[in-house]
Image 1 (cartoon, rainbow, N blue to C red):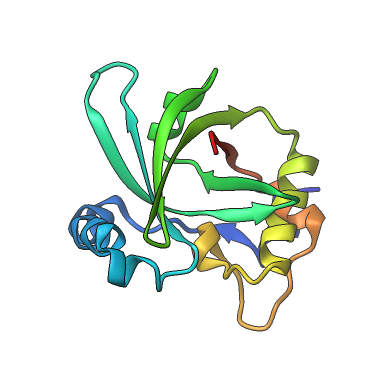
Image 2 (cartoon, rainbow, N blue to C red):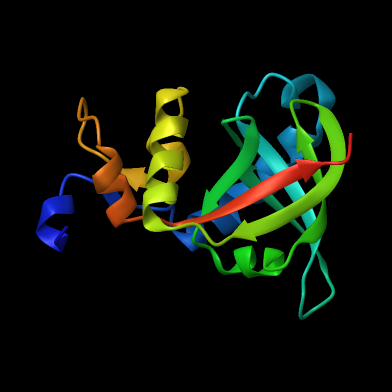
Length: 156
């Protein structure tokens, strides 16, 4: 598939400057039990940076795809999960411990995961995509712009 075939679907993550401004508020809301449990897909993933050793708390969208909890991202922090790393996830007011792993998925596997997340009700915005209103991207289009997948396995 050539680049011109994917003009209807493109990556469009929020600008980093906007995220630095909004994330502190989102973190606070997600960790407030009464508010956090009302937010369906948003979660807070906490982990230790592989180079700095600092604790990082990143708001993410969590997607249930074929019984697995996935995070779709191209942000540099994803590399912390190459080989797996312990995480604490706050989701819907509940705190759970587990392990996150950066998956080495093929474009076809990543495209299928994107499609499954969209079919489950995720919005293109939640996946960091820009899609024309009313347009349903195909698995092939999604595979052409496939991003990294992080799988979260909970201890409980």
